[in-house]
Length: 248
Image 1 (cartoon, rainbow, N blue to C red):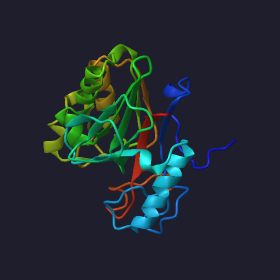
Image 2 (tube, one colour; image 1 turned 60 degrees about the horizontal axis):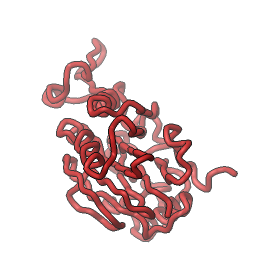
Image 3 (cartoon, rainbow, N blue to C red; image 1 turned 30 degrees about the vertical axis):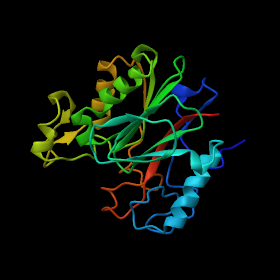
Image 4 (cartoon, rainbow, N blue to C red; image 1 turned 30 degrees about the horizontal axis):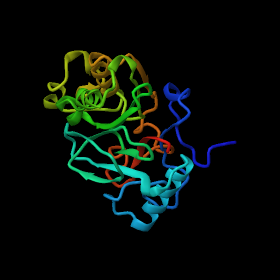
């Protein structure tokens, strides 16, 4: 059967049947423009009732109730916490858990949602990796928090969601300087440098010992028919979510 919603299902987790995991697109919801249609972000100016219905639809498509959502209250930082139940967790950009029936949720609209699992240990994690969080160490911090619950990096699998591509991520010199030179792109036709956020996130995962890494090739800013893009839509847009959880 086709998905009730056009969710992106990471292939790296395809053989783990009790894992509910997906990255949403902007399609399949009830929100009106400029948040059309599957906006999952209550931090926007969208109708909260529409956002809640959209969240219900996503959870239902994964076989869980909306009450299962554990949502990171993101601040573009590098703090991670282990959680045992649903709710809003302010000030955090990463969540990890061993609990079943809990969907870890990361919002995004150009930044990446990084979803991780060690199926053998029964530990999952999710983090919000924009450029600030990536530079601050959100990815290795999330891996370390999973290790504290018994996971091992060599057994982990990771998915890096659609986010802004190197071709579209123009930055100032001060931002470029925060990244290793290997992740900074320069071109004679570009007025300013660009950063390859996906490559930086992959490198941080691999440096932390995670070898099975699936990086989604899609660019949120290039394809605003499919994805919300904060930069591409001048801030007047919705939010996708990366979600991961063990089914009860």
